[in-house]
Amino acid sequence: MRLNLSEQLSVLTSGKSRMHILPWNVDSVVTLKGSFRTSPDFQKGDELIQDLLVSMLDKGTALRSKLAVAEALEDRGASIRFQSAGIRIRFEIKCLKPDLGDVVQLLIEQLNQPLFNVDEFELLKGRLQASVERMRSDTSSLSSSMLSRHVYHADHPARALPLEELERSLENMELAALSSLHERQFGASDFECAVVGDIAGVNLDALFTQLCSGWSSQDNDDAIFKVLPLPQKRETRHVEVADRLNLDVRMGHGVDLLKTHPDYLPLFISIFALGGNFSSHLMSTIRDRDGLTYGIRSSLSGVSKDYPGMWSTSVTLSQENLERGVGATLSEIEHFLGSGIDQSELDEKKSTLTGAYQVQLSSTSGVASTLLSNAENGHVSERIDTYPDEVLEISLEQANRAMARHLDASSLTIVSAGTKEA
Image 1: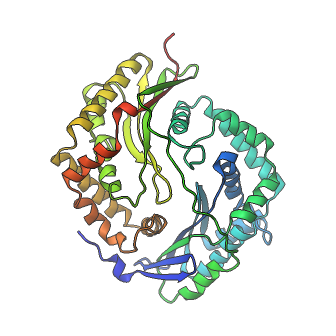
Image 2: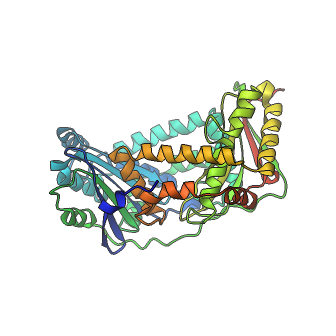
Image 3: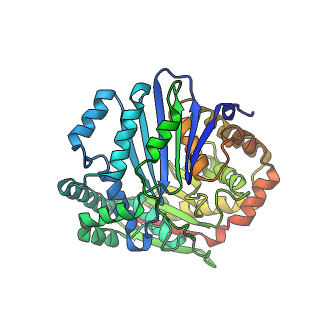
């Protein structure tokens, strides 16, 4: 099932910066996606500062007002988007080929010379404060965030702060904190980008030089992030929320492996079979057979080449079905881990995953995302072709061995959020 995209793929390199280039048969349209590494101190709340900083990037530059930025993009039918993602900041450009140089120049301005307008800062800060207040009644967010604090070490990017700490940090945050973080963290550190589309006639060397220009060479250390040791027995926690008769339940534990570990893909497929889609084991039992929920899911999340993640199962249960639903879910998880995935389940999930991958590669955006993800996670460029074969080659023994090594139903932390019966 090997694809042949890598035969057309080229890579430009300058120091720690790389551009992955793939021509695509689409008239005059180019998609560019990229990211660079930062080193926020998660224990000190730097992630919140980084999130606000990234939200400020499209609010004007030292050379152009917010309105001028918007008009420059609208006049060209182009878009630039930013995302704060833990220890990386990502960006995305979509534009027509003749406008690529101008739009990249605007991107560079936004990244290197954000305006830091105090009125925009206060507006964004107020919106975030309102969002935090809404989280007080959001059972999904409450259960997920509490579980993260029982799974991850305090410096892990995926560990959520308690609402009280979020509110306090926001209340005390000033605009100077954003400009200080920008000065310390923004730079060409582990800089990766992918360009996909109609690039015939584009001076790619000049484009790469343009993208890398003006960046200070930040020396962001390769921090080590950890999950907490597995508890010796199951732990149960509850967050009481008034007038929420449907409760959100999360159960999970840390998984101490990186995406580059040979067990990652077999484990991912096994957990996908347990609860990854509508034909998964938990959906067919807890939802379809027992009728205890409309939604249940199990996943391996938060794993990258830089930090480990967690295995978690989420289920929404009515107040009257809470105890029964949690018990049934745990029972099915224990049964699945004990008996293992069977060959028919494995074959079905491998087919589903490879099919979804083919769909992802049907657009320039999907291809660029795949190239960028491979680069960020330390995979070779050719993996865009070989990934389907990697999935199909996973054996039953590999899948079940990975589950036995890394998953333990007796060490789950179970968190519920909502209104329990009095």
